[in-house]
Image (cartoon, rainbow, N blue to C red; front, top):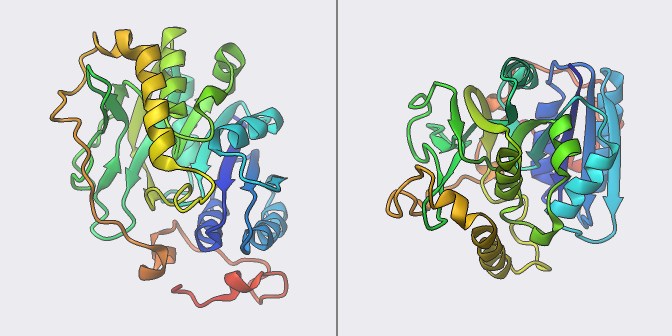
Length: 307
């Protein structure tokens, strides 16, 4: 198996630093990392340079795509897909932390042995204790409301793999052949919102299935990667793209056995900022960074062990 991992960045360098430090613990090889910097104006470019040095020293391939302005999640990921070479392609947002070194292999094995699966998503957990479930796949009500499955439940409440209607792309693994068959993310949903759900429905329309594998866990600082982008009106694009999603797929999910409108009501749960937790305690194993002495590390990477 070969893997490409696409990671979106737009400012919030402290989150990028943490995410990339967790990625350095990935055991999958060969592994290509494609970092997409969507016009960051903070220390993100320095963090990405630091990561490139560390990653190449442990056998990772690194591509860095730098855009002068924020071209959005959809276009940014699509540009990354053009240079991704792996048999399997993962998406991560920069507000995630991997919890298991072999997470890619576990998801990859599932894809290998589930011949009709296009996308498999891990269980997303809130980073703040007690690490309840943020999302274990997504469901769509007959009228098009989106439900994050398992949201707010205890970490171990969902432990069996299951087929789902769709998944969110904060973290997932997909087959390259599916992208080759149905195309990349639809830029009609640019800059962000609903493009991942649409991709899943397009894959399903082509005969594929979507699954969640809750034995693989990823921590997620929810709604951080795209939050605070002054050039994007999120309320507007969410409403606009929601209308497009319903128009395109309403006839499909109206006949599916999705959740009721009440079950799909959004649960606004407390969130934890990265500066309020010891995020390194969440990472798998131990890592001796080659440049830990600080010679090659940007200032943000020289902070104390607890940010």
